[in-house]
Amino acid sequence: MSKAAQIRIPATYMRGGTSKGVFFKLQDLPPAAQVPGAARDALLLRVIGSPDPYEKQIDGMGGATSSTSKTVILSKSTRADHDVDYLFGQVSIDKPFVDWSGNCGNLSAAVGPFAISSGLIDPQRIPRDGMATVRVWQANIGKTIIAHVPITDGVVQETGDFELDGVTFAAAEVQLEFLDPAAEEEGGGGAMFPTGNLVDELEVPGVGSFAATLINAGIPTIFINARDLGYSGTELQGEINGDPEALRRFESIRAYGALRMGLITELGQAATRQHTPKVAIVAPPAAYRSSSGKPVAAEDIDVLVRAMSMGKLHHAMMGTAAVAIGTAAAIPGTLVNLAAGGGERGSVRFGHPSGTLRVGAQANKQAGEWQVVKAIMSRSARVLMEGWVRVPG
Image (tube, rainbow, N blue to C red; front, side):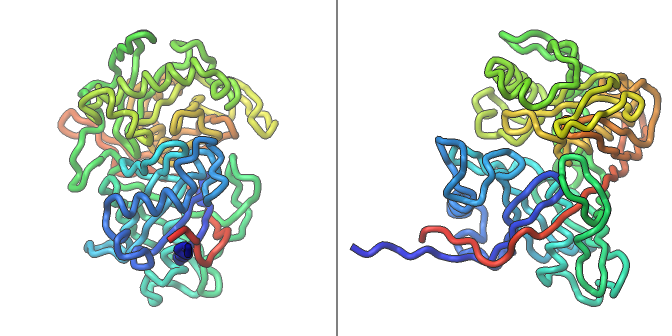
């Protein structure tokens, strides 16, 4: 009995920031997968190698972590003043679903370079040498990202001396501007602080009651003081990911926080919305040794942050969570701001498991409400492989 041959789809495997993902142009996908729905999800699951009960994704392009189980779909934008539409899919490792509820800030750094190299940007917009500006419409959450991509001899420059903690090798710097990062829906809807408070008391049955800052900026995030959960804020991955009870507590906090933020209407929905919200613990500066062994001095950072992603402690920091950190740090009274020493600030350097990262945010108060004009941070990106990805027909 004959079997269906594999189909092949043009694809590019890219690193963006501290993440990796498979990038597609929309028109290169099979017709059934060019629109949202079950066919698209099934295709991307098979590309990445999910669901995998072994949690290794051996039969796919995924790397068995939240940072490497990712997909991106790009197309020319139909929106005025935008170049490309960017759709991000976070693929579950062991369950059969793709989470479309948020953005990936790290892979955002690769969107501009991919768009230029794939012919999605008018060649007349690309300088011979210098910086190309790519205006990106982030379709998952309806906001604008401006990517500043270095160009040398008319092509994207990928090599350079920009170092990013969590990435072993240096590369060219790509600066990203996240405009109006608190806008969580198309048209700018969605409150930055969904409860109306800078700090809430979050009650989690079976876990406890904690002060929490619930914020929609970059990505919905729940910030809790590390000491309230018995942590110092200097923990590395093994100290939390090797503790099943700790992971259960964090997931309970995430579910009840999602309910409090209005992201879900009943607790059971949290299981199929793993990408958002994020949970992060914060603490005042303290010295520690990063996962690479590099010492991080207390005086080199403003605040300590550790964040959970897809049920595990992230090895560095999600780009969208960095936007949330920068935004919360800029607003006096949030837990992030208080852990960083309080007061108004235009940027913050925080310590994460792999080292440090600086992110800036422009915040101001209008009619009694805090608004953030934009958040700025630098990442890097590089093509790892390009050609075709194959999946069983």
